[in-house]
Length: 147
Ligand code: DAT
Ligand code: MG
Image (cartoon, rainbow, N blue to C red):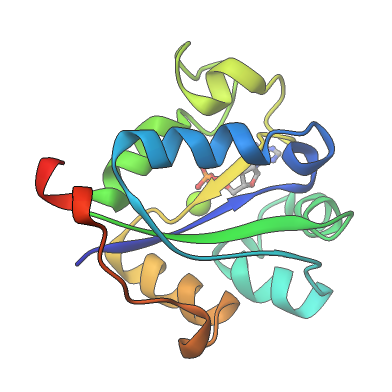
């Protein structure tokens, strides 16, 4: 089954949005298979955001994502990678539609509340960066046949 990496960024944690964000994915019908509050080291931040290392905002991005705890999660479900991106909304909260997480809670692109993998390949890479195999739980939910 498809899995994606989702993270409440330091601004989302400070603004008490962990519960709200978890609730959106739970109520949509996805299954949480891993989750933890953690601090991101500079090394992990640079690796995670490696694709942006030549961008002018890279330094700011790394210092923001390491500025406080994040809530890292892995969610599972059919089509979860793309659908989670749609639930998050556009990267720039000023362009994100109302009803999306960034559209409802974000104001500026530097602090856009949430991260989500953008492809199957990045999901695999990011899950591997943030979680050990034994931190991801395989289990069944009886309700899954209704989703
Ligand atoms: P996304 O997080 O939607 O996948 P991205 O991968 O293009 O977006 O960029 C990663 C993060 O970098 C993004 O969530 C916020 C920050 N960022 C992107 N573009 C930026 C910009 N023009 N100025 C400042 N920060 C930016
Ligand atoms: Mg991205």
